[in-house]
Image (tube, rainbow, N blue to C red; front, side, top):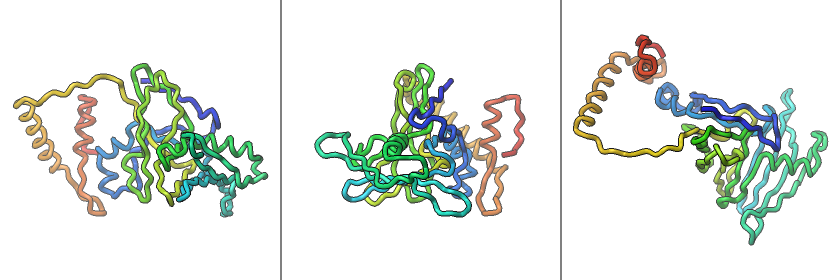
Length: 271
């Protein structure tokens, strides 16, 4: 299945390419070495914001239904970050989706003026206050899928580090609908969201749009399931080892995975 990458047209050429990654540094050792978690982690692609490596973007959501947005740039050399621009965004009463955006500060040395700061803010954010407290953070690339395939947008899976802000999940038929990539964060008053050019803002899965039928298992199906389960755990026990930090692991799942994908491969017992 082929996916076409369309750059963020508001800030083209800025931001990392989407990439798969099975690692989650915040997970305990046992979680990082668990093959089924690793496979879930690398499903689809991590998506990054349209920011340079030294750029960061912060959003604060306050009690008065006020959003404070600040873009920062690391000048390097151990110097403190420079505020590129600071803005306040407030949803307007009466008309859903309407809002007021005020630029409170612009660093003229960055080459921006108020109009440029508003354009950059639009390149980074969308769909304010939908739902209440929500804000969409745009991705560096949009996706066009092959006919019959959808894109599932969700937060980074198996990322357990705190604090976390919930991300709404959306499934869009990107083979015909030109969706701009966004991840809708649902903030509560007092929440602070920090986005930088090196960290993912969400994850996308590509899924086929086809019917699924569910069927009850026969007695033979149940017996086969139990037999496979017992055989797997008996074989796995012979390969278990303890890591230096006390986690009990075995590579039997990976061995069988390789063997099922390539029946000619040998059972190496290696990770």
